[in-house]
Length: 159
Image 1: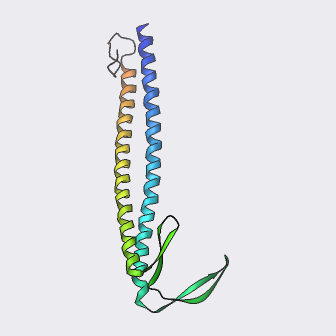
Image 2: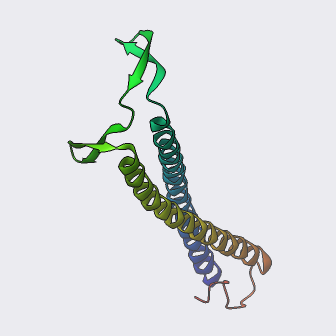
């Protein structure tokens, strides 16, 4: 009867550990997805900064101008030192290219801090997954050892 109780407790712990592994794994995948999106956003801000720096070097720039959804025709960009910048929720302002570069750099710094934070979260979740996997392996090893003796230890310190 004591062996049955010990086996029941061991099964409960195994289910609990497997559930925790699944939850932590889902959290880690979510954070990795968020990290990938933030890295892409950071790359876009860096590319924007490079473009804004290069635009005012010339008075006019050749460009393909969209005409509707399907057509493009050759044209030129003028006044390339003037940029409309999104300042907030549906709030735009006309700024010089150098001012817009500053705004893009500040936004990139903010995103870079978020990337670092997400990297740390992913690392911690990976570490937690390793610990849970070790606990599960340890529990399986201990459960298969003694079989029916009255050792009094289930590997989790509960019996």
